[in-house]
Length: 127
Image 1: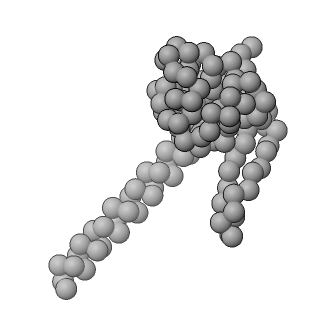
Image 2 (image 1 turned 30 degrees about the vertical axis):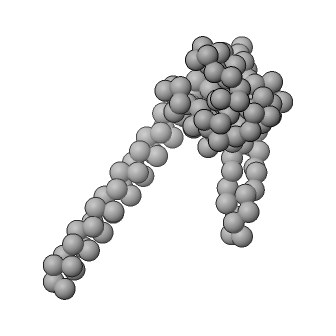
């Protein structure tokens, strides 16, 4: 079973990047990235997303067989809080259901934005 760190190392080496080069690409220090590859700590979800985007892979590939996920959340005061959840492995059904809900929510938000744009356009026509 490959760990997140071994997956990150393999991907980076396949793309012939140094730790420093890739760390700069996703906006973290080389030291932080090194700890991820060594499985000494795990990246935040935002960084996992950037990694998946860069390598053009599904984030599920990175998370498969990893039971600890770190989420970053802005508090009311604007201070980042780190919440570590020990969650069971995400199976395909749960992940698919979650992605469907996210997509439906995004579609709804887009429809609201389009409605807002139409309303603003009409208001400006009458002004």
